[in-house]
Image 1 (cartoon, one colour):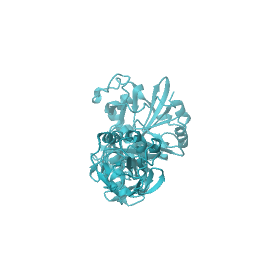
Image 2 (cartoon, one colour; image 1 turned 90 degrees about the vertical axis):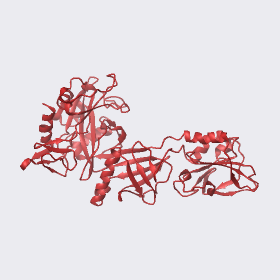
Image 3 (cartoon, one colour; image 1 turned 45 degrees about the horizontal axis):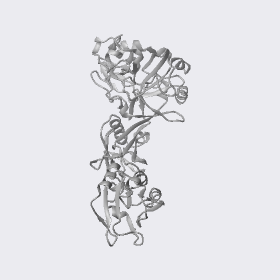
Image 4 (cartoon, one colour; image 1 turned 180 degrees about the horizontal axis):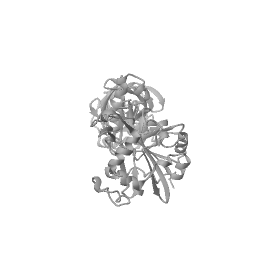
Length: 504
C-alpha cells in the first residue's frame, strides 16, 4: 500500500466521514469540523483532499544514526522504499500521527520492532490536552511580580507567578481553568500562548503589580525591555561564604545585597572563622542569623533583586565605637553586575573610591560563576481516559505499568518526567522535542505527541489492541516515503535502551 493510499484509506476510516457535496466531517477532536474540498479544518492539521480527510503534516520518524556512523541523509518522495533504514534504529513519534478521539479507537500507530532479541511495541498518538500548561523557569534575581499575581497575555489572564526557586523566578501558565473556566477569549488566548511557548516562540507577558517579561524557551528573558545576562551565583549569604577567603586582606567589610538573604561578611560565620574584625556597619532588615538579613529592601529590578539603586540606602547605622576611618567596604550584588567600593572618611561616612584590582577580580569572578540567564519551558499535561483507551481496553493497567516503570513514556521521542501518584501526569522540556511538535484545536486544547514503549508480551497482558499492531518494516514501507525524517537528538536517551528500568 502506498503512503498516499494509507493516508486516504486508513486514516479517513479512523478520523473522518464523507458527507454530501464532497464535504468531510473530521472527528479527530470534539470540534467536528465540516471541511469542504481543498480546505483545512480549524486546527489546520486536517484537510479535505478530493473528498478524503488527510493530514497536512507528515508523521515524524526519528532515526538513531550514532551507531550507523553519521547524520541522516534525507530521502526524497516515493523514490525511497524504506529498505535503507534499519527498523531497529527507527522510532515512530506521535507528531503527525493523529488522535484517538472519540476515545474508543486504537491509537493511530501501534508499532512492533525488535531490540536485543526482545519484541517491543510503541503505541503512538497525539493527545488532545485540555488539562495542560507550562511551567516557566526564568533565570534572574529580578523581581517580576509577587507570588500569586496574575500573568497576562494580550490583556487576558493566562497564569500566575508561583514560588521562586534558587536564582530563578517561576511562572505557571495555562491549566484547565484558564482554558475552559473563563471567557471564550481567555481560553483562546491561553491556548495561543501555550502553543507559542511550546513551539519555541517569543511571548510577551505582563504581570500584575510587576513587570513585563519576554519569554522564549532556551533564550535569555527580556525584563522591561532589557535582556537579562546572568543567573545569580547564590543568595547574599552563599556569595559571602563562597568568596570570603578571596576577600580576606583586601576588604574590611563586604555586603552582598540580595532581596532574599543579604550577607554581611564580618558578622557571617565565614568572616568569624577567618578571624575578621567586626566593622560596626549594621544593615536594615530582619536579622536571621549572624551575617544574614531578610527584607533589607522591597523586591524590584535593582541591586540584587531589590528596588534600590543606591546600595547605601540599606545601611542603617555605623557604630563609631567599632568602625574606623579608612575602613574598606565593598558592596556588591549576587551577580556582580552592581558593585561599589567605599572607604570611610574621618566622619565615618562611606565615600566612593577606585576599586582595587584584587577586589575587582573577585567581583568579576562572581560574574564568571553566574550561569547565563535562560528561560526554560516545561510542558505539563495529564494523559486522560481517551488517550489511554487508545493504548489498551483497560486503561488503569496502563497507568499502573507506567507508574511501575514497565512502560516508558516519551513525547516526540523526548524523555519525560512522570509524576508519582495517580494518573499519568508528565512534564517535558519543549526544546528536546523536534520542531513543530505541538498543535492546537479550538476547543481550546493543546495537541501534543505521546508515545508508550513496552515489551510486546507485556502489551498483550495489559489488554492492548493487538489486532492493530503493525511491524516496523511494514510501516517504513507504507508510511516512510511521505514521513518527515530526522536524526535522533543525541541528548535524548533512546527509548529502547538505557536507564535503571531498561526494556530487555
